[in-house]
Image (cartoon, rainbow, N blue to C red; front, side):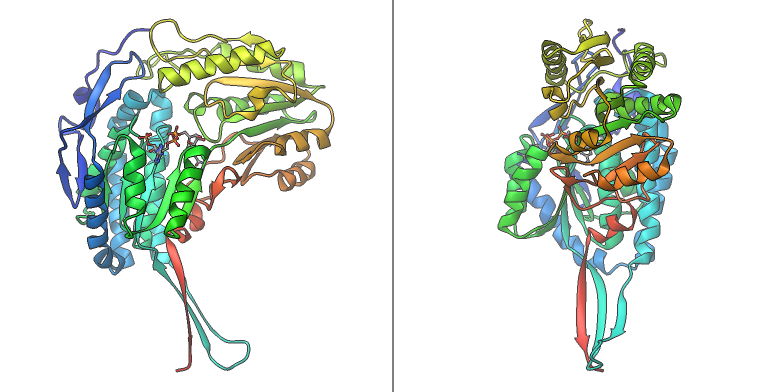
Length: 489
Ligand code: NAP
């Protein structure tokens, strides 16, 4: 793989790419810095200001100071700022995409798709901001009136992961601002540049000082804990691992903070014997390889009926072998590197342990040897129902295939893991597909479709995959409290 020669300045918004905290509308430089690492060669891409606990508390104070005025800003005015942010993201589409590729490693086509997806959250929630509903009814007893209104929850702390540095930020900022909340965004320290660039776009779109604050504390733990303890945070919206989510839920419990949790996944991908195999393969590639496999929605466990198993395994092996691992900015590349050396080693160990348990490698199976964090797209066949690899979120380009012959059996295995974010089902029998979808323990189901993400739809999981939904109308409700007035007038 050729190492990048592109400089950050050449590839990103402009030489003024923000690398500092945004607090109260000002860019604040701190002495401590975080290195943002280029996953292609491990070099330092940029140094970003690392916010101290005090800096983070100052961001919370500034969001708190801005709250009253933002909450009472006309919904249409809030909507216009979100709409303008959408438009400016589209103007800067290519620059943002290159920035995502540089700090995250995903290929440019995936990064472009992410920018479009991320910007859509601003457009969708600009439209939702003016549709905050209420209710006015006579009580059934006839004794009084029931008036129901919705109010912004308050200052929201938003914490996001590295795998979708733009979309996970806008999926939270959009509904929060639409509802009238002010926010402190804490992006992942591996990929802070995209979030800072989006904050800069929002400033240009006219977001008032203090409404959107961004801090990148490293380490994250003490700063996030201090913010949750500050008495000023009323909402925590977290996207990340189940492990960290559980820690934060416990911390939020101390102050009874309203929580939304978008956590890990371990999606089953079930191919019945009557499925259209070519369409199932298209869906499998999308569900497995979007973002190089580093997506919470990634298909992690392929359960394929024995009658179509060989055809599916051959087809998937062919398609996965045709992928080209390399620098995400190179147009020939179809799979970028993983985000870190640690993640690359983890995937290698998962594959090795699967083969020790009897799996066969039909393609890939090895880490890139050119110093990058790449891993060859891998298909593992003859994986047993009880193989340990099926119990872990792989988060990389590895597809384990399990043979099945009984629908009840495959349903039980689909549901037996702790996660329940999304499942995929391929069958030509829509009745069977719908019954299966209903019985699957997951918040979302792709029925003859390998992609479920849509800003207009409620995204989220059950069990260890989280609490609450983002996107759709539900995404707005997550940042609103319901107030009920019982009255006689
Ligand atoms: P992560 O390690 O849980 O980190 C997520 C965020 O939490 C980052 O901003 C991180 O900051 C911060 N953090 C880490 N440890 C913390 C602590 N002790 N206290 C407070 N904050 C802490 O997750 P990740 O590795 O970035 O992301 C991958 C995970 O996210 C996967 O499990 C994936 O499935 C999940 N995910 C879920 C969805 C969904 O919608 N359900 C979407 C995308 C990703 P630092 O970066 O500074 O450590």
